[in-house]
Image (cartoon, rainbow, N blue to C red; front, side):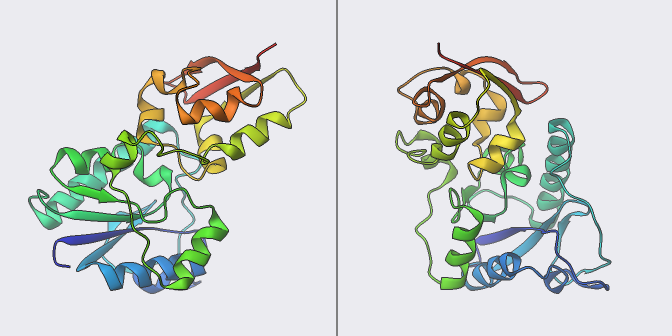
Length: 238
């Protein structure tokens, strides 16, 4: 396990006093993630929206900072800082496996990509699971066979079923158009891939792509995409 490093995203629910970071976050989700990486990884860190990369034994005061309200540019800057901190702590990342237990806001704005470019492998065991599914997964204590980031991106079936909530959301919208942020879709489908944030082609109305089924099957199409503002406009296909 010495070549496996866990990354656990922080959560909103915290103790009301200073405590070691491993104990500060008090939600069942965080505790489940912590227990998981303590079983599977030789070392682990917390991804803090305020402090960046945090050692579990570092004492922190409670704080109320989240990446949810941050812009895409701010999230990328945060990710760059975390990458610098990881390299300072661990040195060469070549050959390491990072097991990431965090949401898209923490992982998909350059962090996963930066780890891969540095020669590391990235696994996301709970990817594609909704909040309640994640809680059940971590509570079960079972290990899920994870896909690496490389396999997830290249697999033609990687998103199968994942975008059904988007189809349901669009189908229930009475207007003929909908302007929505990437972050809202990210929350809806439990995590957009890196390519959605970086490549306009990901939003193409191409029925051969699993994500496109999320809007085409509901009778909608992507009209415009603003990659800088991280927003997409859907319109009905008729």
